[in-house]
Image 1 (tube, rainbow, N blue to C red):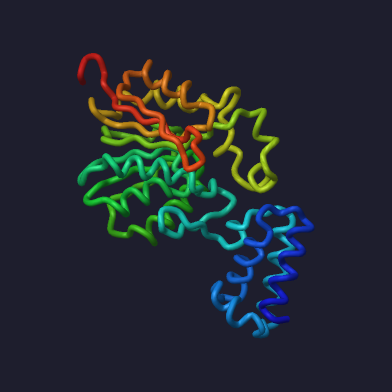
Image 2: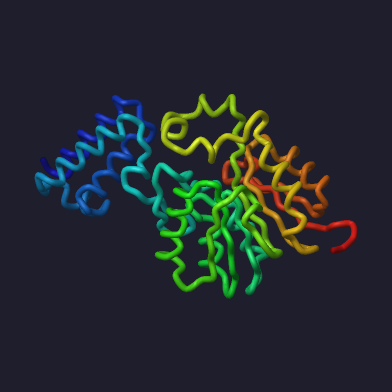
Length: 283
């Protein structure tokens, strides 16, 4: 079949399977399977795909029709202008999380130290180190499989940066103090997780999604345990659910943070809470 015929078949198959954005996914999978660009499809759509390309594309369509995420099929996801490797062991980086990175970058100074909890693919920490000068960072995750992905991303994207990934439960493996604390922790209430899209519910790690009863469990823990690891004046940035801005702001205020701000995403929904650690004793 030609590229155009394959593309048409892909759109039809994914539409029948009720895959969101079926046309876009059909095109991206075709580009991946045939190693072509969008321009190739537009200008040279009448070219014949090889037998191997056709076989690969049709197998990818079958898997995508089963609601396996596109990113798990291609193995990559773009984030902050960088290409991150992803698999079923990490949360797929999302555009909403770029809001957090962009907010940190507004205040990030050369030489700052960054601690990223629940680091997953490492997308937050790696992006910050890539776009800063002389900063160092530590990423922490409970999942050794996720850390393997993060380390691969770091070796490929920021080989010369001072970056380490540690396995453990939040602050357990951490020593020293940091200027910046970032985290995109699990924040979806347990009773909501089972109602998510199949791509998320069935194929992304539940431990990266489930924030237990009210979705606030990890914010409470991080804020209760963070003081020994922050300087007076250190900044903390959390990604949050759309309805958690007020609750997380209150938790931060009760934990010694001031100048707390809630930042909205591109859809106008609360997405990031930021504050400055200001302990009463000034230490």
